[in-house]
Length: 407
Image (cartoon, rainbow, N blue to C red; front, side, top):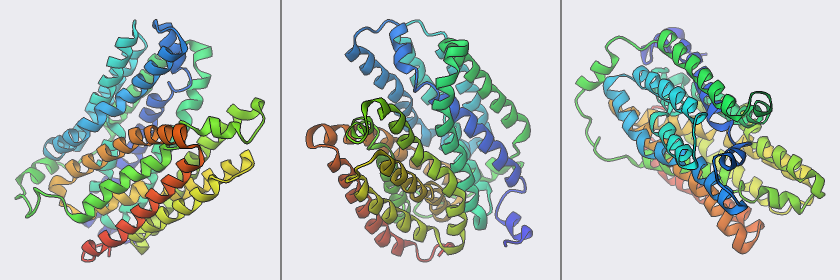
């Protein structure tokens, strides 16, 4: 066990309290951002879209708008957090998201919905900002475990959001659901403002540090983590456009939506259960080792998913794949934390977040194109090849970081 005095030596004395606040805030904001999934097409129709094609198109644009704007702004917020304080960025994100979410419940047209979703991505970024704060304030010997807890909170929000989104609208209406989500994020804003602590003068101290040699260019380990983050999201999201159609080949029509829902949730549940454990394992055995092992395990698990003959087999395999992928996010952030100085950590972790958003957008697009033109199985097998190549790339990239503290 790591000695407490050693813990504080290279981290903040408030790191445990901050971890709790960040997990709560991230869980709350992610729920608010994902609860619209079950009723988004209905809301788009209420706002004036008509016809199946138009409703489907506008739903996709509205959903992807947040990730699009967030991908561009994440490095900026990370850089400003390095300069002016990371707590300030979380206060900004939670207040901005509370306002944007409440306004979503007052939209009067599809264009306003899309614009407000863009605004939510522009002003938001609480979860990614929390990852930056936890990564930089937690003692390096505990980084993997702490980021694993953070990842579990984020995945739990992704898991719970659609479930809540399917429950609240019949009770309080779609507009009321958005307003309730805004109120929940406002609670996270209050918790962040009054409970989260940043070391006094931490931002000024970072700003006063001389620019490290080579800061203008990224190291090979950092580049490897950016690529790995994108691959993680591609692997998670590539099946999303085809999963209902794929399940339709395996089960009776009356069970399609139920089994597809289980298959989508199974991977998230697996990641929730494994993230903190794999993060703790990485602190002991090396983050690179866990990253390579997770990528290889996920690649292997994709092969039988392409050849299942029963719906329950797909659900079980997706759960185990979630267990494998759960260790990647905390380990990616940990490797970056160990390979960049604190002065620019926020900016680089912001780039990491952007790369994950790229994967989150590219995954469904690639899965839909490949599934539509070549069939379902090539989606799984193609993703398998990508993850295997990613694992080999990390093996070679690890040689550039042998002198890093985690090695």
